[in-house]
Image 1 (cartoon, one colour):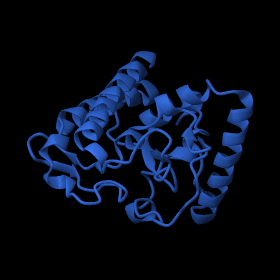
Image 2 (cartoon, rainbow, N blue to C red; image 1 turned 180 degrees about the horizontal axis):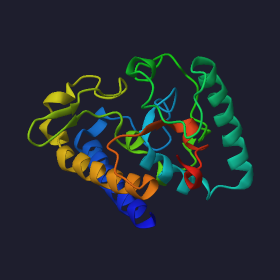
Image 3 (tube, helix red, strand yellow; image 1 turned 30 degrees about the vertical axis):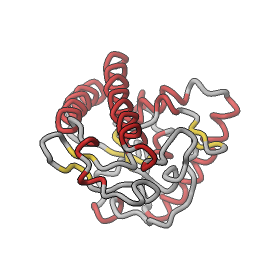
Image 4 (cartoon, rainbow, N blue to C red; image 1 turned 180 degrees about the vertical axis):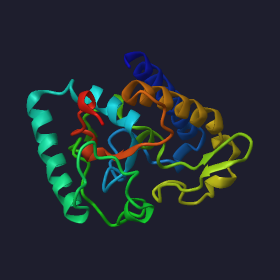
Length: 211
């Protein structure tokens, strides 16, 4: 499992490299940076591999920081259980109807439980979505994987036409899926293509007692 996590973190670091390169090439068009927390609100779905990596960073925090974050996570879980009775460990979303969890309220301003003074406590272990959000995901081939971008970015430019922002997304996502299937094989005994959760409840998953 540790080898899988290490390989996944290395993959995420290549995403960081793409993002930093895009920032440099887009000059003053990208406002995203460490310390900007505009998108660290509401509920983001992440894979269980992201959740496991998040926990690897979480256990490095002080006990006081962990307890504060866990209290916020449990409060968030209680809100979710009001909406979805029976939403319980291991807090995966895939058994819920897509319309129930994909279209979360866009005006939800609840901060991530790991956000303190606009700083992510587990920045080096943050999920893929946290690293790639804000800039469209367009492969070198022109294939569009995500045509959205942060409204604070590109105020005077359409980034969908900026070829310098393109990257090998198809290969990256293929590698992510391969690592995820290896991860679920270790976790469950068989490969699974998709298992998602939310960032707050990711802190509450017990991977040693996962079923």
